[in-house]
Amino acid sequence: MLLQSHADFADSYIKPIGTIFLNLLKFIVVPIVLFSIMAGIISMSDIRKVGSIGIKTVCYYLCTTAVAIVIGLVGGNLFKGFFPILETSELSYEASEGVPFMDTVVNIFPSNFVAPLSEATMLQVIVMALLIGFAIILVGDEAAPAVKGINSFNAIFMKCMEMILKLSPIGVFCLICPVVATNGAAIIGSLAMVLLTAYICYFMHMLIVYSFAVKVMGA
Image (cartoon, rainbow, N blue to C red; front, top):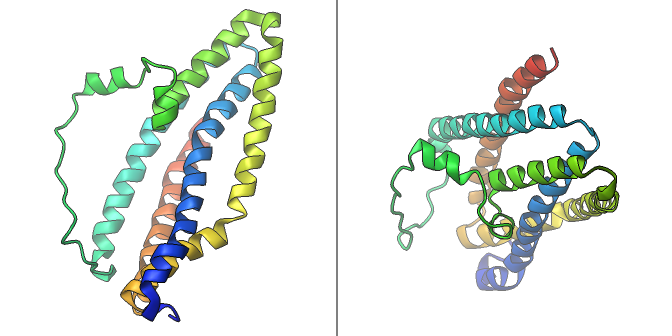
């Protein structure tokens, strides 16, 4: 509120700190997924379990993502009357053509080692982690240095994630501050409604998806 008369200052000097926080979150996602899955696979040392878990992981990711999208769309449409109307005259959107089902299946499997990591294509990263973990088990004792390295990297990136998450209050503040400075104090109520809607969707996702997953997989 104090910065309403200095919105340019908030946008130029405070918002970049929030952007740095978002960049750090994006940075940590891929290595966390890659090394945590590989570490989990090689800890089992059983090829049959790896194959079973690999299929279940991909199916679980696809299903939970689909349900999350549906819940998000339903929640957004139910509460859209409470959301703020912001200036969007300079924005444009062009819908892309639908991708055939088999093309989607083909795109799950990476054709390049670096591209999925740099583009954060999560399904391809998961497939990479499964394949590498599977190969390490097959190699056996010769892969002992790799096993040690993967476990070390997993611990390192977990610690990195812990450090980044400790910055959440500062990062979120720096992201919200320019929005309030630009749109006025009234936007806080609308942002609170957006946040409430998000938490309702999170709760529904937890209640429906995770409860069902625990019941099915724990049986």
